[in-house]
Length: 374
Image 1 (cartoon, rainbow, N blue to C red):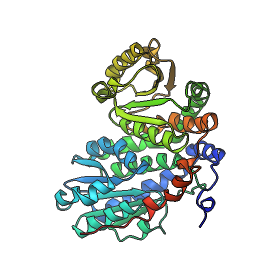
Image 2: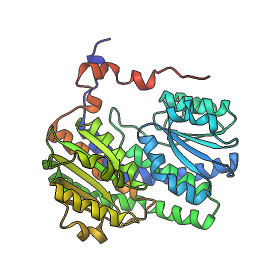
Image 3: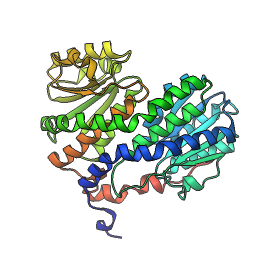
Image 4: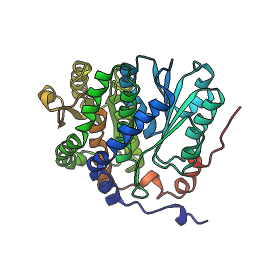
């Protein structure tokens, strides 16, 4: 097999198409996700001592972004956890009767398949979420398999798939809720998602088209977020790896002050996710300190509080007002648009497949790894 046969062309316009279809695809998926989530609770009940949200990459971030909502609605401890950490370590101490929710859009990630298999081996309840019911994950025996309709456009990093995964988690959390009134409030929020994403998209594109000029191929990037939007920071770093291959660090906003502060200077490009939630005050303080360090700072925040960053930020994305539960979905849009624009501005290739060894290794290390069962 030649290197060329392992390296599909990077089609940036396919990425843009994926981003642009987000609102419509969510509108199509929400009713089915809701019905399937309710069927899942009918099949396996809703009383569990602990819940694990298991995934890799974007799927792990979807769990991270919704973990606190799951806990609030179910009233039990919930942990978003990497698939390998769960299957080879945490499963040993999982309380009997726990629920393991595994997510992989492609259904071909071996560590996620392994997590389901090990969980069942230990007698835990398993719920599989995948965009491909015919995939290895979709075919893996589980207590409930919940496929969602996601027509992948082709060889392109995940963008809209992340929004669908987040919506699926929101619907499942509502379905497993012990408080039906709170669950209905979440469902009402989800129903408004397509319009909210369309409005957010209108805000993001023109700002991102100007923002991209601040980046060079040699730029070091720091992305900060707290609470549910730590997941957004991690997701952003991944898109910057996957498309333009920028060296990017994702960090929790407070932890930056204890860690990356020591290396950050005017050479850094910083993105700060600062929704109008309980973390806002600290985000304002950190933004002011980043200004003192001379960094180029972009802040993604609520339109109602954008003036709080007028003196500290070089770029502000004034996002439409949104509840904390949905912020990780709309706040992920700037990273998606920037990844596309940075690919056009700086070059790069999906997953660095333009470099022969990356092309050769790429899929094998994720999709053809050995499953380990003790």
